[in-house]
Image (cartoon, rainbow, N blue to C red; front, side, top):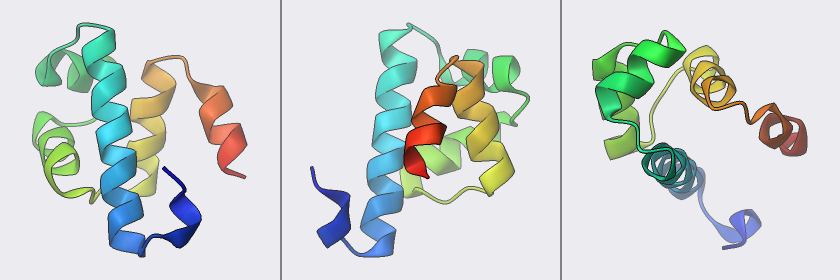
Length: 75
């Protein structure tokens, strides 16, 4: 999916779906991913549902999976 043609809210939801997909590929529960990243369970749950999250929490979730390269590619 090309993000450049989507509204900001849809991009946020797409990022949430991608983060959730990575979590599932690694066979982590939401609680396990939250604990591993230092992000609260409620924050992760809300992010996967709505796409809304603080930038620092988003970075923690990505880093917890060892996917810092994905963050580099964002820039």
